[in-house]
Image 1 (cartoon, rainbow, N blue to C red):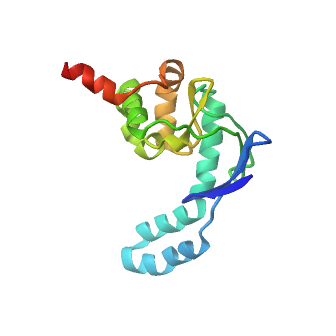
Image 2: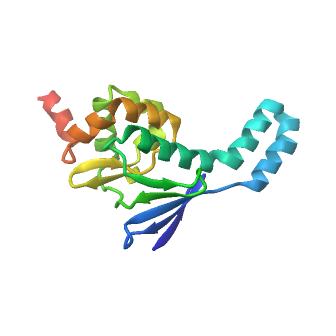
Image 3: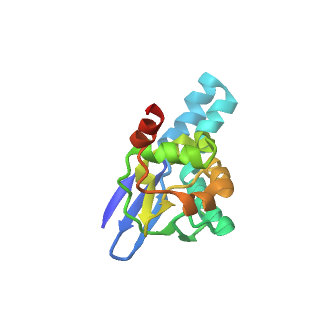
Length: 176
């Protein structure tokens, strides 16, 4: 068992139970700062955006993740079993994969006609993925930009992703 914290969510990893539990991180101090000094400095729109992001980013990410899995049923996504309106998500555990970032990124660019550029944060990090029986699955997909890519290309990625893909070998073929 271990606890991992990110920018907007904290994850309780329970490999022996086969699950992870994701909780939103709510930044009360940053939210208060955004409503006070940031509104004064930058105006209502930017101050309010900072306030909203500090309070609900983690909740929204959890809820989007759950809805994306339920709506698409994509085999490219690690199953999210349950969400309590974004307050907590229960997802199947998966070991983060050890692919090289360049191999993952270049293959995903090719498979999605470069649409992964719409959400480079989620698609470029191998730790956001697991290999399940040789099939690539996404672990962290709580973004509306991720939603579009998964909806359009998720099944294709699940079906055709090659874990042995090597960008260096692809480049060498073109040099010869």
